[in-house]
Length: 560
Image 1: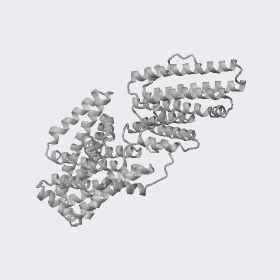
Image 2: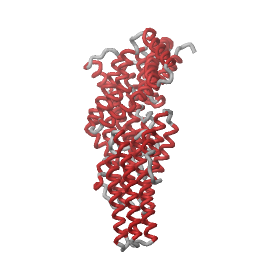
Image 3: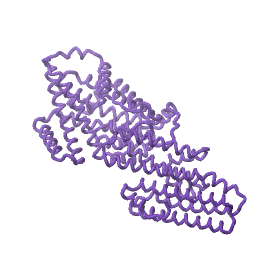
């Protein structure tokens, strides 16, 4: 083919590769910082919008921010109205990269700037193979250079194509056709940034007039919203609500922008005084996203309530944070997994307390649950079989862990996930220990023998004391202090075991207990000791690294 249309096509592919490298590098370099930024600054809609703008501007990817928000919303960490606010902010934040492309991509000499940067990045990447941080920094710069080299390809190819073909016939089509074109292109390549880059190249080459270029950008606004729909298919109702809300917000934005197309163009070109068509196109995109945020902001709570009515769903899952799908953002699945395991430990402590009629508030358990966790925990109080619910949660956690492992390549993350699973297994063993003595406990409670009832009261006092200490310990942040307290707790439960055993033997010597009663009490004592030890090990595995946890477990114990 004589024309350089394939150069444009290749430029689009290179642009997408650059975007992928850029997104991956940035998410790996500072993924936890950005997750914490979203978690800590979404308590109200204003903070959520600002967080969306800032995070997207720094990450240079509305896709990553959207997927992070979807995962948080699906796990109940961010409220729906706040998640929608983050999405509005992300739509504004993504225009910042387009401003960079419009101002630098078509004015700087590619040979003088981007090629040397690409060469330097490649050389450093080869020289420092194995250093993950340097690799990600190199990938960031390589991705950035790919973006601008791709723009050069598109610009050159588009200029040559315009000289060979007559595009005047396309200008007779109505703007709605170009809105649909923008929607289709963005839907197919799943990148509004690439759509804007293609449109800027066409505008630079004078292949289409300004008002039709603007129509393409309007279509891309709706096309980019479909990525969340694809990510939410088959997921929890919370994720479906956010995906539907995102579609609703972008659909209304698209309709308003199209209806007021020419007044908005006049606003950008005449009132704002932007004469450069490339900057004018990005300014138009910025204006419609800022306007959409202003319009929707007062109604976010109303919209979220409507979405909750439309997508009620029957969520029969026992877990709270995880669901059937694994978040696509690197490292994010690990954060969700950590929250679920932490909640699992807390609910096992609450179950153990309930088995001996010890109130959560009495031993400080209520304060360690989040509001969302506590709401679910209250609902468990009415279940006939709380143990089955905990066992179901363990199964869901294991299923999530297996899926998560397939996507893991980072050795440290994999080791941490294995540590969390060890914690779940130990906590489950503790819960089973309390369940297995249920019939022994009931036998003591229903006995007319005061001595047997007093033995049960002694068990309860020791369990109360142990759970109270673990409730305080589980919120500790000092690793060395945790190690010390866990070791002290192991010594304490061993001393408690011996104290109860001596008490049983003393009463047996007085012939105050039958042989069957002695066997029952001994069994209870051993099971509770084993359960309490397992709970300590569960907390150790969750809060410490493997070496530190083994240090706790290797404490010499006379009872095995």
